[in-house]
Image (cartoon, rainbow, N blue to C red; front, side, top):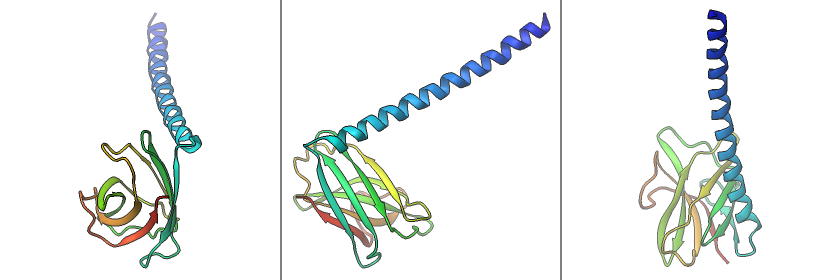
Length: 150
């Protein structure tokens, strides 16, 4: 009888673990579907970001949909110093709005899912700066990437 109780306990723990895995996979599939929707929408703008003086070899690409948000990728970014992070900015009507903070991997690659920006009809420029960890409400650091929206 003890063996049966132990077996049920083991199976119950495994069932809980599998349910958590299924939940993570469903969440990832949902995230991927959101990104595919943005990438495939004819209403999405594609903005190329070019490297600036701190990192001229860096490149970025922003797929932006006013209602759905966007997806940003970058390559060639140098590792951020300790206590620093990269921050993506959407500049609309001369006002920079934070689109999120991110870190680059050791090879300089990064990606960021960007939520829609409330009240913004058109973004004029996307830019990336180096800011204190966690980001800031307004840019203060060196600009690494910038690209004008069509």
